[in-house]
Length: 163
Image (tube, rainbow, N blue to C red; front, side, top):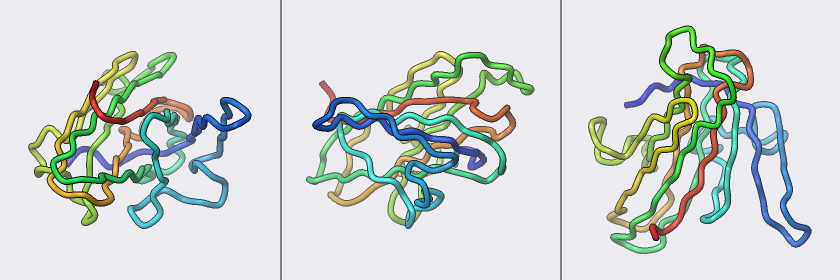
């Protein structure tokens, strides 16, 4: 499975009646609501953009983002962009952001060697396209190496039906 070490300062872009709104919180999407496990996952909506930046104050902080698959054999596409402005990676790894599709048992879909995950380095945009065999709730696990200055790396995620 991909690395499970990150910290998080996250923000969520939401389009509402009043237009585009930005909600930010230290390590959580909503103050007082954690997203460090499947049980605490933050709900995603197709077509909306979720943005985050890891604060790396704790090495084992992760972000779980929940989404729903409505029918068997539905294919969804996840676009993960590493939006890090300036990468000073001590490991010379490009300030990676890891994204992994997980099931309700906290297991990577298709197993550890599947293509249900990706790594986006600074300035990179990657796509995960996956056909879900059954309807239900699934999760996108966001991680980093956990060894960068607070606010790095930064990322954005969106998902929906492929065009």
